Image 1 (cartoon, helix red, strand yellow):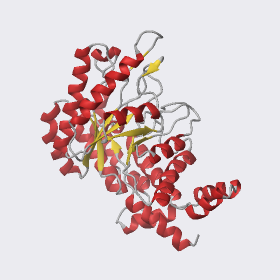
Image 2 (cartoon, helix red, strand yellow):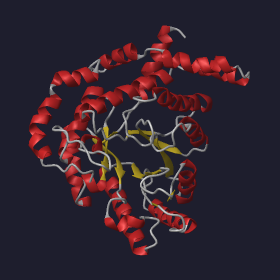
Image 3 (spheres, rainbow, N blue to C red):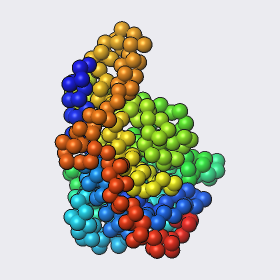
Image 4 (cartoon, rainbow, N blue to C red):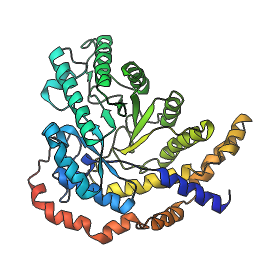
Length: 397
């Protein structure tokens, strides 16, 4: 592939790539054992918006911030005007809206799958309120993750819980506006250690279909067993028109929430490749929301987020360099080595100079992470927020 064609492919890919940052990624978070407090961590929704705005200013590709309803809109629909004002002030829009049906005491035995009809109704009402908030904020996607499951054999009627989920999800779907979507997430285990009600992509896909056509599957890259072939899952969901979005992170074991590409950048590349290959083969561009779901506990919040966005751009750009025609021909002839080399050549290509030139053409810093350090933004927010973070709890909640 000629250098000029490489540059054009990467630039075209960058023009179309946007990635959403999570509000909770800027706050003090950790594990169920505890968390390490950071002096510059965001302690309010305004500080989260300020941090997200700074990331977008440095990278130019993060125009939205995902919001958790109970954490970011504690007064529900009454918080909408405040969110709108913050969006205008900091130059980032509200992105996906995330209801919370897992932290309150009532959800000890589940939410949509709880045997108590009153608890199921409470969970449903919260999700419906969250959809209304999304409508008022102009947010398209409502991301649903459920901690529902059981810890001991025989303690739950698995088939009955599935039926309750279908019922609640159908009612949720009926409340959507025409342009809205539900993104239904899955997770194999934790906090439920015997069975999880939506444990894998197949369960999520079946429930999404049962809910209605505006429901798609959300793939969290950390929500898989070790060594699971996530790109195959992505390929199947693409072929079934069921892939709605990603929560990107990396992991060594399971759901570690490590930064993208820190453990296995080749896996993220392979995921992006499957999407690009699908687009080339079908001539259609799937409607996929790219989102980060990381809560840096050791790395600095701002540094980790900017580093993550840069890694995502680099891997997305590499995936754009796969020679699809050559790959397809090699696959048709079962030329295994030639086909594999198509991927390895693209992955080995250093696209950073092309990305730096693209950034400069947009008036952005060529190296956003270096620009963050040189701006002294982290030092500034650490001074301003230090006292508030001293009073924060060291527990996870």
